Length: 462
Image 1: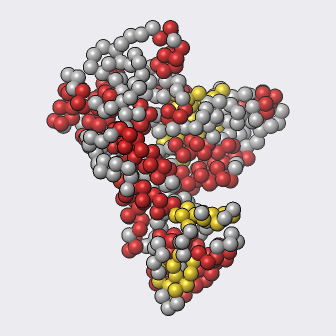
Image 2 (image 1 turned 120 degrees about the vertical axis):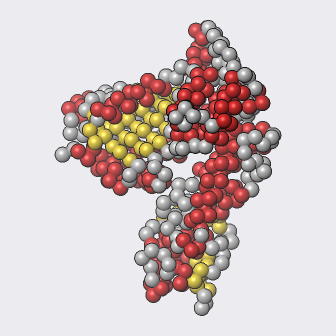
Image 3 (image 1 turned 90 degrees about the vertical axis):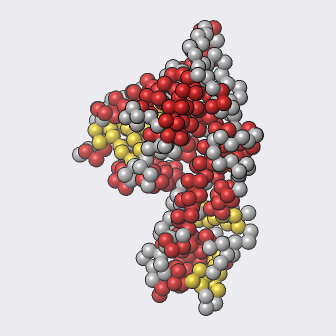
């Protein structure tokens, strides 16, 4: 089936085996006409678009049709005599409509908050459906359209609704991976100024994971947030957790054996007797548990996983910006994060420093700082991105995503080993879970933070 992807920075038309991106003024015209869902859009409505006037509408429609003709679908936009234009959507799929349908009618759509009693299977299916729907979202499909249409506001409301529904579904699904995802979302909301209800859910979620240390940590954060004047209902939640009220716990299937008991002393086990226990204690985990596909992580997978924060430390970040397709995905992520106060930090080696020269020699000239120009341009274009440089050879490539994923992989610095590893593409990432009882992730977060604090802003390079 032919498809129209409106939920990305540049709408993409897929017609048969051919595809074309729609950019500039033409993209606004396309979004407006397609979102009208087969209804006629008048010239005066199109003229409300930025940099558009009624006497230029016909030319913009002609330019759009010429572009569509390159992939054989110029008839997608038809003229309604004396009225305007409309999209002929029979046989076409539109991601914005799929998103709306998934949010308005998810499995278990009666699920409205974390205390609703629904079957775990229904909650799991709802979580999967909503996660796929939110995965479609890179930008509001109605971004920049006239406010009078109401499209942009309605999709923003749908996006918020989808996030709420996904959160509640994950809390009720009984899957450990879902509960971990819910904890990350609750942490994000609490630190952004959450209500006492959000703090209460976060405490209950950690208690359900039977992690007393995390419960105590959240209580301390809540006391700091409320300046030690905790609301009465939050105090009641804490008291109920302390006395072991199981009614507050969310269902968790296949919970890890030997995990600490939230209502008593931690259970001590001989972790040396089983290497798998040691891995779990340190937080070395399966990437799929944290919604990452495999241990050989690509920038695209990291981009797709990012909610609000992405940190990277490496050589020159060439894998993020030299491939035009990946750079476009990265740019779309930055555009989204610009609007929500996101935080993206990239650490690279100084392209003019001693470390660069040493690495250039070690790799027999197989090193280029071509990526730096792309990073500099993105750095100037996006408030969410900051790039800094350091002058030493990195031991690890480090990626930190939101509050729940830390990965590292060792660098092959010598030329032969570097080329044998397909220029680093075959290097496996070790995926770490910061919510583990004794997380190894903290060491790499500290390493990143220390290097960042000592690094020089990219824009300060001469």
